[in-house]
Image (cartoon, rainbow, N blue to C red):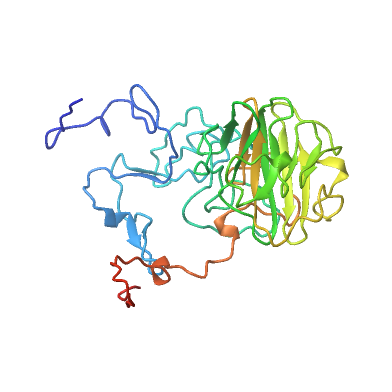
Length: 354
């Protein structure tokens, strides 16, 4: 395959009289997130107009543009997700060059296309978290965990588990620290009693099947629960395709609740701490969210990066970096470094680190 670069000063399609589109080409569509899009008309600018160095971490971070935009310039920050119109989600925050969103949904729940999963932390939640409001870095299913019998889609939020013979599982890429946490999983494909969804210790990396996990907790699509490999305990009503499984986990008391489509199973009440499915989960073992399955069930995760389908209990937050304590180490190179050296069979001093 060969290609040739355009000649200097070639007029391209952008800002031409043709129909303009962001996120698609002539034959295909962009596979990723669109965020904070600037177009400056009539100026040639370098990266310093849009980025700066963080004084604490030394990292290159984005900054707000402070110049002029030109006649056709615009800034799409997607901040208003109250609707999917040109005056809301497609609004030009720098002027009046609004864009018309196509095939974007802002409906609460798994199909919402407006997410607040961003590198920069916003203000932490103060109470019950509605989802889709607190900006920060959010968890997803972990595609790096070992195992080949799973596929991931939509930013690693959609998980399909398809082992050849016995059930396997997948874990998340955050664990739950001290606090109260709420999240949802929408089951878009049910296969028998699968998926099983719940909690497992974060060190269970390889194909963990939660219902046979001696340290795991889950609910099946039959509404029965498994706790510490004690299987098929009668608990609540069953789930079907399209149902939302609700979770509330109080790490400090070791209590876990499951819900269905806005109602907590077995008369549970996370807000008051009563009637949990489990009440003795280890408070010293780091747990993460997990799912296991057989027959290609699909579990769509919402940790709060988009609006929750149902109201979270009072005091329960979405798990994201904005709702976590500030890290003790802000510059990793101050506590870790690498040096190459050759052994000589004797004592050596390795210096020049840090």
